[in-house]
Image (cartoon, rainbow, N blue to C red; front, side, top):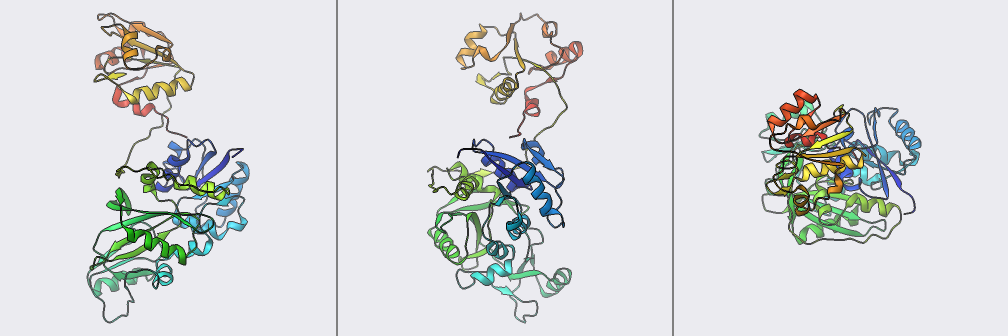
Length: 428
Protein backbone atom coordinates (compact mmCIF):
# COMPACT_ATOMS: atom_id res chain seq x y z
CA UNK A 1 0.00 0.00 0.00
CA UNK A 2 1.79 3.11 -1.26
CA UNK A 3 0.18 5.75 0.96
CA UNK A 4 -1.54 5.65 4.32
CA UNK A 5 -5.30 5.32 4.16
CA UNK A 6 -7.37 7.46 6.51
CA UNK A 7 -9.98 5.58 8.56
CA UNK A 8 -12.96 7.22 10.29
CA UNK A 9 -14.55 5.28 13.17
CA UNK A 10 -17.99 6.32 14.45
CA UNK A 11 -18.95 6.25 17.27
CA UNK A 12 -15.36 5.71 18.33
CA UNK A 13 -16.02 5.40 22.07
CA UNK A 14 -18.27 2.34 21.79
CA UNK A 15 -16.84 -1.07 22.70
CA UNK A 16 -16.72 -1.75 18.96
CA UNK A 17 -14.88 1.50 18.27
CA UNK A 18 -12.36 0.80 21.01
CA UNK A 19 -11.62 -2.65 19.57
CA UNK A 20 -11.10 -1.06 16.13
CA UNK A 21 -8.58 1.30 17.73
CA UNK A 22 -6.72 -1.56 19.40
CA UNK A 23 -6.70 -3.49 16.12
CA UNK A 24 -5.49 -0.70 13.82
CA UNK A 25 -3.76 2.03 15.80
CA UNK A 26 -0.22 0.71 15.29
CA UNK A 27 -0.65 -0.40 11.67
CA UNK A 28 1.65 1.60 9.39
CA UNK A 29 -0.83 1.57 6.51
CA UNK A 30 -3.67 3.41 8.24
CA UNK A 31 -4.24 6.69 10.06
CA UNK A 32 -7.08 6.55 12.57
CA UNK A 33 -9.72 9.23 13.13
CA UNK A 34 -12.30 8.74 15.86
CA UNK A 35 -15.58 10.66 15.89
CA UNK A 36 -18.42 10.83 18.40
CA UNK A 37 -21.60 12.78 19.01
CA UNK A 38 -20.91 13.31 22.71
CA UNK A 39 -17.72 13.23 24.80
CA UNK A 40 -16.86 9.58 25.30
CA UNK A 41 -13.90 7.30 25.99
CA UNK A 42 -12.71 7.72 22.43
CA UNK A 43 -11.07 11.03 23.34
CA UNK A 44 -8.69 9.15 25.65
CA UNK A 45 -7.46 6.66 23.03
CA UNK A 46 -7.82 8.30 19.60
CA UNK A 47 -5.02 10.69 18.73
CA UNK A 48 -7.25 12.25 16.07
CA UNK A 49 -10.54 12.82 17.88
CA UNK A 50 -13.56 14.63 16.44
CA UNK A 51 -16.49 15.55 18.65
CA UNK A 52 -19.96 16.94 17.97
CA UNK A 53 -21.11 14.74 15.10
CA UNK A 54 -24.95 14.78 14.96
CA UNK A 55 -26.74 11.68 16.20
CA UNK A 56 -27.30 8.96 13.64
CA UNK A 57 -31.02 9.73 13.34
CA UNK A 58 -30.45 13.46 12.73
CA UNK A 59 -31.27 14.93 9.32
CA UNK A 60 -27.77 16.35 8.98
CA UNK A 61 -25.89 13.21 10.06
CA UNK A 62 -24.79 12.18 6.57
CA UNK A 63 -23.79 15.70 5.52
CA UNK A 64 -21.75 16.05 8.72
CA UNK A 65 -19.98 12.73 8.08
CA UNK A 66 -19.23 13.89 4.54
CA UNK A 67 -17.80 17.16 5.88
CA UNK A 68 -15.43 15.16 8.08
CA UNK A 69 -14.50 12.92 5.16
CA UNK A 70 -13.62 15.92 3.02
CA UNK A 71 -11.74 17.78 5.74
CA UNK A 72 -9.55 14.80 6.71
CA UNK A 73 -9.42 13.01 3.34
CA UNK A 74 -11.10 9.92 4.77
CA UNK A 75 -10.86 6.79 2.63
CA UNK A 76 -12.89 4.34 4.70
CA UNK A 77 -15.59 4.60 7.38
CA UNK A 78 -15.92 1.90 10.03
CA UNK A 79 -19.37 1.97 11.69
CA UNK A 80 -19.16 1.03 15.36
CA UNK A 81 -22.85 0.68 16.25
CA UNK A 82 -25.64 -1.37 14.70
CA UNK A 83 -27.79 1.67 13.85
CA UNK A 84 -24.80 3.38 12.27
CA UNK A 85 -24.05 0.28 10.18
CA UNK A 86 -27.54 0.44 8.63
CA UNK A 87 -27.60 4.23 8.21
CA UNK A 88 -24.27 4.33 6.42
CA UNK A 89 -25.16 1.33 4.26
CA UNK A 90 -28.39 3.06 3.23
CA UNK A 91 -26.43 6.14 2.18
CA UNK A 92 -23.33 4.43 0.80
CA UNK A 93 -23.73 5.96 -2.67
CA UNK A 94 -23.88 9.48 -1.22
CA UNK A 95 -20.88 9.15 1.08
CA UNK A 96 -17.43 10.49 0.25
CA UNK A 97 -15.72 7.39 1.66
CA UNK A 98 -16.30 3.65 1.45
CA UNK A 99 -18.19 2.02 4.31
CA UNK A 100 -16.64 -1.17 5.70
CA UNK A 101 -19.63 -3.47 6.03
CA UNK A 102 -21.75 -5.86 4.01
CA UNK A 103 -24.29 -4.91 1.28
CA UNK A 104 -27.38 -2.88 2.24
CA UNK A 105 -29.79 -5.80 2.00
CA UNK A 106 -27.69 -7.76 4.47
CA UNK A 107 -27.55 -4.81 6.88
CA UNK A 108 -31.32 -4.43 6.70
CA UNK A 109 -31.87 -8.12 7.42
CA UNK A 110 -29.41 -8.10 10.32
CA UNK A 111 -30.98 -5.04 11.95
CA UNK A 112 -34.32 -6.83 12.35
CA UNK A 113 -34.70 -10.07 14.30
CA UNK A 114 -37.98 -10.74 12.46
CA UNK A 115 -36.36 -10.35 9.04
CA UNK A 116 -33.41 -12.47 10.11
CA UNK A 117 -35.62 -15.34 11.25
CA UNK A 118 -37.90 -15.02 8.23
CA UNK A 119 -35.00 -15.18 5.77
CA UNK A 120 -33.15 -17.99 7.54
CA UNK A 121 -35.94 -20.12 9.03
CA UNK A 122 -35.65 -22.71 6.26
CA UNK A 123 -31.83 -22.58 6.26
CA UNK A 124 -30.85 -22.94 9.92
CA UNK A 125 -32.68 -23.61 13.16
CA UNK A 126 -34.28 -20.44 14.49
CA UNK A 127 -36.16 -20.04 17.79
CA UNK A 128 -39.88 -20.67 17.68
CA UNK A 129 -41.56 -17.26 17.40
CA UNK A 130 -45.02 -16.52 18.78
CA UNK A 131 -47.69 -13.96 17.97
CA UNK A 132 -49.27 -12.10 20.87
CA UNK A 133 -52.62 -13.51 19.77
CA UNK A 134 -51.49 -17.13 19.68
CA UNK A 135 -53.71 -19.23 21.92
CA UNK A 136 -51.04 -21.77 22.76
CA UNK A 137 -47.85 -20.16 24.00
CA UNK A 138 -45.41 -22.27 25.98
CA UNK A 139 -44.41 -20.07 28.93
CA UNK A 140 -41.98 -18.80 30.00
CA UNK A 141 -41.03 -17.00 26.78
CA UNK A 142 -38.29 -14.57 25.87
CA UNK A 143 -38.99 -11.12 24.44
CA UNK A 144 -36.64 -8.59 22.87
CA UNK A 145 -37.01 -5.55 20.60
CA UNK A 146 -37.08 -6.41 16.92
CA UNK A 147 -34.50 -3.66 16.39
CA UNK A 148 -31.97 -3.49 19.18
CA UNK A 149 -28.54 -4.46 20.40
CA UNK A 150 -27.06 -6.05 23.47
CA UNK A 151 -29.61 -7.06 26.07
CA UNK A 152 -31.49 -3.76 26.18
CA UNK A 153 -35.21 -4.48 26.46
CA UNK A 154 -34.71 -8.24 26.50
CA UNK A 155 -36.34 -10.22 29.28
CA UNK A 156 -37.95 -13.45 30.36
CA UNK A 157 -41.76 -13.35 30.54
CA UNK A 158 -43.53 -15.79 32.83
CA UNK A 159 -47.20 -15.54 31.84
CA UNK A 160 -49.79 -13.96 29.55
CA UNK A 161 -50.59 -11.05 31.87
CA UNK A 162 -46.95 -9.99 31.92
CA UNK A 163 -46.74 -10.46 28.15
CA UNK A 164 -49.78 -8.21 27.60
CA UNK A 165 -48.17 -5.53 29.75
CA UNK A 166 -44.88 -5.68 27.85
CA UNK A 167 -46.63 -5.69 24.47
CA UNK A 168 -48.69 -2.64 25.44
CA UNK A 169 -45.46 -0.74 26.09
CA UNK A 170 -43.72 -1.89 22.90
CA UNK A 171 -45.52 -3.62 20.08
CA UNK A 172 -42.35 -4.00 18.03
CA UNK A 173 -41.01 -6.96 19.97
CA UNK A 174 -40.10 -10.51 19.10
CA UNK A 175 -41.74 -13.16 21.28
CA UNK A 176 -39.78 -16.40 21.11
CA UNK A 177 -39.23 -19.64 22.93
CA UNK A 178 -36.92 -19.39 25.90
CA UNK A 179 -33.52 -20.86 25.07
CA UNK A 180 -31.86 -22.10 28.24
CA UNK A 181 -28.62 -23.72 27.05
CA UNK A 182 -25.08 -22.52 26.37
CA UNK A 183 -24.54 -19.47 24.21
CA UNK A 184 -21.86 -18.97 21.56
CA UNK A 185 -20.64 -16.31 19.15
CA UNK A 186 -19.27 -17.42 15.79
CA UNK A 187 -16.81 -14.89 14.35
CA UNK A 188 -16.68 -14.96 10.56
CA UNK A 189 -14.89 -13.43 7.60
CA UNK A 190 -16.14 -13.50 4.00
CA UNK A 191 -14.07 -12.06 1.17
CA UNK A 192 -15.23 -9.99 -1.80
CA UNK A 193 -15.81 -13.16 -3.83
CA UNK A 194 -18.24 -14.45 -1.19
CA UNK A 195 -15.91 -17.16 0.13
CA UNK A 196 -16.18 -17.86 3.85
CA UNK A 197 -12.53 -17.78 4.90
CA UNK A 198 -13.03 -17.98 8.66
CA UNK A 199 -15.76 -19.21 11.00
CA UNK A 200 -14.86 -20.17 14.55
CA UNK A 201 -16.82 -20.09 17.76
CA UNK A 202 -16.25 -18.77 21.23
CA UNK A 203 -18.19 -19.34 24.42
CA UNK A 204 -20.04 -16.35 25.84
CA UNK A 205 -19.02 -17.36 29.34
CA UNK A 206 -19.91 -14.13 31.14
CA UNK A 207 -22.24 -11.41 29.86
CA UNK A 208 -22.41 -7.82 31.11
CA UNK A 209 -24.99 -5.42 29.64
CA UNK A 210 -25.38 -7.72 26.66
CA UNK A 211 -21.63 -7.74 25.98
CA UNK A 212 -19.54 -10.88 26.19
CA UNK A 213 -16.86 -9.97 28.73
CA UNK A 214 -15.40 -13.44 29.21
CA UNK A 215 -14.88 -15.75 26.28
CA UNK A 216 -12.72 -18.58 25.01
CA UNK A 217 -12.58 -20.63 21.79
CA UNK A 218 -14.86 -23.63 21.42
CA UNK A 219 -14.37 -26.23 18.70
CA UNK A 220 -17.61 -27.52 17.18
CA UNK A 221 -17.91 -28.63 13.57
CA UNK A 222 -21.56 -27.52 13.59
CA UNK A 223 -20.45 -23.88 13.89
CA UNK A 224 -18.79 -23.99 10.47
CA UNK A 225 -21.73 -25.85 8.92
CA UNK A 226 -24.21 -23.23 10.16
CA UNK A 227 -21.88 -20.41 9.04
CA UNK A 228 -21.66 -21.88 5.53
CA UNK A 229 -25.46 -22.12 5.34
CA UNK A 230 -25.94 -18.50 6.43
CA UNK A 231 -23.17 -17.33 4.09
CA UNK A 232 -24.86 -19.12 1.16
CA UNK A 233 -28.21 -17.43 1.90
CA UNK A 234 -27.07 -13.90 2.75
CA UNK A 235 -24.31 -11.93 1.06
CA UNK A 236 -21.57 -10.74 3.40
CA UNK A 237 -18.36 -8.86 2.81
CA UNK A 238 -15.65 -8.63 5.41
CA UNK A 239 -16.15 -9.36 9.10
CA UNK A 240 -19.45 -10.54 10.55
CA UNK A 241 -20.68 -12.71 13.37
CA UNK A 242 -23.72 -14.58 14.57
CA UNK A 243 -24.90 -15.85 17.93
CA UNK A 244 -26.25 -19.30 18.76
CA UNK A 245 -27.90 -20.67 21.86
CA UNK A 246 -28.90 -24.20 22.74
CA UNK A 247 -32.59 -25.00 23.08
CA UNK A 248 -34.06 -27.50 25.55
CA UNK A 249 -33.02 -30.35 23.26
CA UNK A 250 -29.41 -29.17 23.07
CA UNK A 251 -29.84 -27.99 19.46
CA UNK A 252 -28.13 -24.80 18.34
CA UNK A 253 -30.64 -22.08 17.45
CA UNK A 254 -29.81 -18.74 15.84
CA UNK A 255 -30.19 -15.61 17.96
CA UNK A 256 -28.94 -12.88 15.62
CA UNK A 257 -26.41 -11.89 12.98
CA UNK A 258 -24.39 -8.67 12.64
CA UNK A 259 -22.26 -7.43 9.70
CA UNK A 260 -19.72 -5.59 11.85
CA UNK A 261 -16.86 -5.96 14.29
CA UNK A 262 -17.64 -7.41 17.71
CA UNK A 263 -15.72 -6.03 20.69
CA UNK A 264 -14.62 -9.49 21.80
CA UNK A 265 -13.24 -10.34 18.35
CA UNK A 266 -9.98 -9.17 19.93
CA UNK A 267 -9.61 -12.74 21.18
CA UNK A 268 -9.14 -14.10 17.66
CA UNK A 269 -7.02 -11.06 16.80
CA UNK A 270 -4.57 -12.38 19.41
CA UNK A 271 -4.62 -15.69 17.54
CA UNK A 272 -3.67 -13.98 14.28
CA UNK A 273 -7.03 -13.01 12.73
CA UNK A 274 -7.41 -9.22 12.76
CA UNK A 275 -10.91 -8.94 11.31
CA UNK A 276 -11.08 -5.19 10.65
CA UNK A 277 -7.58 -5.14 9.17
CA UNK A 278 -8.51 -8.02 6.86
CA UNK A 279 -11.72 -6.22 5.88
CA UNK A 280 -9.77 -3.10 4.94
CA UNK A 281 -7.26 -5.12 2.91
CA UNK A 282 -10.16 -6.89 1.22
CA UNK A 283 -11.77 -3.53 0.41
CA UNK A 284 -8.46 -2.41 -1.10
CA UNK A 285 -8.52 -5.39 -3.45
CA UNK A 286 -5.85 -7.54 -1.81
CA UNK A 287 -5.99 -11.34 -1.85
CA UNK A 288 -6.61 -12.29 1.77
CA UNK A 289 -4.59 -15.05 3.42
CA UNK A 290 -5.21 -15.95 7.05
CA UNK A 291 -2.78 -16.66 9.85
CA UNK A 292 -4.19 -18.77 12.65
CA UNK A 293 -2.02 -19.31 15.73
CA UNK A 294 -2.67 -22.48 17.67
CA UNK A 295 -2.65 -21.98 21.43
CA UNK A 296 -5.18 -21.81 24.24
CA UNK A 297 -6.54 -18.37 25.06
CA UNK A 298 -9.21 -16.78 27.22
CA UNK A 299 -10.28 -13.15 27.09
CA UNK A 300 -11.74 -11.28 30.05
CA UNK A 301 -12.87 -7.69 29.77
CA UNK A 302 -13.61 -5.19 32.51
CA UNK A 303 -13.79 -1.45 33.06
CA UNK A 304 -10.35 0.13 32.94
CA UNK A 305 -9.10 3.65 33.54
CA UNK A 306 -7.49 6.16 31.22
CA UNK A 307 -6.57 9.63 32.48
CA UNK A 308 -6.37 13.15 31.15
CA UNK A 309 -4.55 15.84 33.14
CA UNK A 310 -3.36 19.41 32.64
CA UNK A 311 0.18 18.52 33.76
CA UNK A 312 2.98 20.24 31.91
CA UNK A 313 6.58 19.28 32.62
CA UNK A 314 9.89 19.00 30.82
CA UNK A 315 11.78 16.70 33.18
CA UNK A 316 11.12 13.46 35.06
CA UNK A 317 13.03 12.53 38.21
CA UNK A 318 12.65 8.81 38.85
CA UNK A 319 13.85 6.53 41.63
CA UNK A 320 15.52 3.15 41.00
CA UNK A 321 14.92 0.74 43.92
CA UNK A 322 11.30 -0.42 44.31
CA UNK A 323 10.29 2.02 41.57
CA UNK A 324 11.99 1.35 38.26
CA UNK A 325 13.16 -1.99 39.65
CA UNK A 326 10.47 -3.70 41.72
CA UNK A 327 10.85 -7.13 43.36
CA UNK A 328 14.09 -7.53 41.37
CA UNK A 329 12.21 -7.11 38.08
CA UNK A 330 11.80 -4.18 35.72
CA UNK A 331 8.57 -2.30 36.47
CA UNK A 332 7.06 -2.37 32.99
CA UNK A 333 4.59 0.46 33.73
CA UNK A 334 7.43 2.79 34.74
CA UNK A 335 9.71 1.79 31.86
CA UNK A 336 6.85 2.32 29.41
CA UNK A 337 6.32 5.81 30.81
CA UNK A 338 10.03 6.60 30.57
CA UNK A 339 10.11 5.64 26.90
CA UNK A 340 7.01 7.76 26.36
CA UNK A 341 8.92 10.62 28.01
CA UNK A 342 11.94 9.98 25.78
CA UNK A 343 9.69 10.00 22.69
CA UNK A 344 8.43 13.42 23.78
CA UNK A 345 12.03 14.72 23.98
CA UNK A 346 11.74 15.40 27.69
CA UNK A 347 14.57 15.03 30.17
CA UNK A 348 14.88 11.92 32.40
CA UNK A 349 17.01 11.99 35.55
CA UNK A 350 17.58 8.84 37.62
CA UNK A 351 17.88 9.79 41.28
CA UNK A 352 18.78 6.97 43.65
CA UNK A 353 20.37 5.92 46.92
CA UNK A 354 21.17 2.51 45.48
CA UNK A 355 23.67 0.57 47.61
CA UNK A 356 25.49 -0.97 44.63
CA UNK A 357 26.98 0.37 41.42
CA UNK A 358 23.97 1.74 39.49
CA UNK A 359 25.40 0.99 36.04
CA UNK A 360 25.85 -2.68 36.95
CA UNK A 361 22.28 -2.95 38.21
CA UNK A 362 20.96 -1.31 35.06
CA UNK A 363 22.98 -3.69 32.91
CA UNK A 364 21.69 -6.68 34.90
CA UNK A 365 18.12 -5.62 34.07
CA UNK A 366 18.92 -4.75 30.43
CA UNK A 367 18.24 -1.04 30.95
CA UNK A 368 20.58 1.22 29.04
CA UNK A 369 22.12 4.08 30.99
CA UNK A 370 21.59 6.11 27.79
CA UNK A 371 17.89 6.25 28.65
CA UNK A 372 18.78 8.85 31.28
CA UNK A 373 20.04 12.35 30.64
CA UNK A 374 21.62 12.29 34.08
CA UNK A 375 22.14 9.79 36.91
CA UNK A 376 22.31 11.15 40.45
CA UNK A 377 23.78 8.62 42.89
CA UNK A 378 23.06 9.86 46.41
CA UNK A 379 24.20 8.88 49.88
CA UNK A 380 21.74 7.29 52.31
CA UNK A 381 21.57 10.45 54.41
CA UNK A 382 20.97 12.79 51.47
CA UNK A 383 17.60 14.41 50.87
CA UNK A 384 16.51 14.02 47.28
CA UNK A 385 14.81 17.42 47.38
CA UNK A 386 18.26 19.03 47.68
CA UNK A 387 19.30 17.62 44.29
CA UNK A 388 16.20 18.55 42.31
CA UNK A 389 17.06 21.66 40.31
CA UNK A 390 14.63 21.48 37.38
CA UNK A 391 11.52 23.59 37.96
CA UNK A 392 9.26 22.12 35.26
CA UNK A 393 9.49 18.60 36.61
CA UNK A 394 7.71 15.68 38.24
CA UNK A 395 9.07 13.17 40.75
CA UNK A 396 8.37 9.40 40.89
CA UNK A 397 9.38 7.42 43.99
CA UNK A 398 7.92 4.55 46.01
CA UNK A 399 8.88 6.22 49.31
CA UNK A 400 6.18 8.35 50.92
CA UNK A 401 8.79 10.21 52.98
CA UNK A 402 10.77 11.11 49.85
CA UNK A 403 7.62 12.22 48.01
CA UNK A 404 6.49 14.32 50.97
CA UNK A 405 9.90 15.97 51.23
CA UNK A 406 10.06 16.78 47.51
CA UNK A 407 6.46 18.00 47.38
CA UNK A 408 7.06 20.30 50.36
CA UNK A 409 10.45 21.69 49.41
CA UNK A 410 10.45 21.59 45.61
CA UNK A 411 6.74 22.18 45.03
CA UNK A 412 6.48 19.86 42.05
CA UNK A 413 3.98 17.03 41.44
CA UNK A 414 5.02 13.71 43.00
CA UNK A 415 3.83 10.21 42.10
CA UNK A 416 3.99 6.78 43.68
CA UNK A 417 4.33 3.78 41.37
CA UNK A 418 0.58 3.08 41.62
CA UNK A 419 -0.11 6.50 40.07
CA UNK A 420 2.22 6.15 37.08
CA UNK A 421 -0.76 4.92 35.03
CA UNK A 422 -2.21 8.44 35.23
CA UNK A 423 0.82 9.70 33.29
CA UNK A 424 0.54 7.25 30.38
CA UNK A 425 -0.79 8.55 27.08
CA UNK A 426 -2.86 5.88 25.34
CA UNK A 427 -3.87 7.95 22.32
CA UNK A 428 -3.02 6.35 18.98
